[in-house]
Image 1 (cartoon, rainbow, N blue to C red):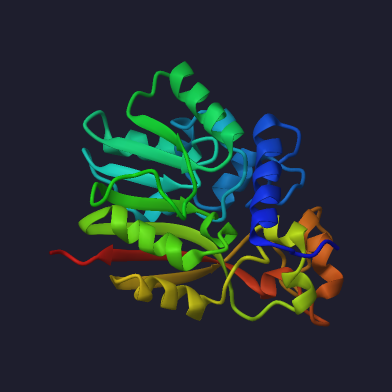
Image 2 (tube, helix red, strand yellow):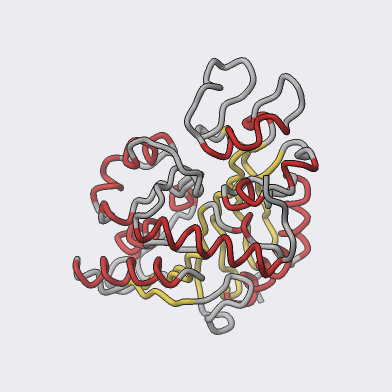
Length: 280
């Protein structure tokens, strides 16, 4: 087991791991947890329909999702959408098909290889209403009050400063703008050993916070109409469901660190978040 040392080291390790996934040196499966499996099938388990997947370049599907934020975003023609941690553009391309030519989707990611891959796919498929910017979600390269909707898929958990992330979301949203996020959250505290695992952090587990804390972060940033919908994440087993013998590297890495009789799915869930910035 590797332990966390500094925030800078964590960010570096996360960036390097996702760079490897973008290059194809490391497979992704569910929020960066390397395993075997079909990425299209995994996306369908998370709620993406065949029709939705048909408008997304197949190469953008790196199986790094924990949900489908576009399903709760109610996107409309002409809207401006910002995707935090956009990766190879998976949700950006789907959102672009919803907002149409009069709308725009901006993807922000801190991994250069992901930005390069997303831009290449957009150019190849002539998807002109998407733009990809290199940057960190704690310091968004986006102007104030200019975005209608912020989406994100299994990324905010990777930030060491989630309070700042939600303040940044609030800053860039127009008055009355909304959030639609799927992310990892905890229903119970992880054991200390699991919290200190770099592999578990990269795999979107060790950086997750309790559901109650997640709500506090959103409330504290000034949002209203906050709703959290908690769902089982299909990438992790729960105790007694007969699926503990899996190939998920994060599950295997921290299995011995968990409380006796519990599996990773007894701790980690998908949290679907919706909220609004107050109108002026």
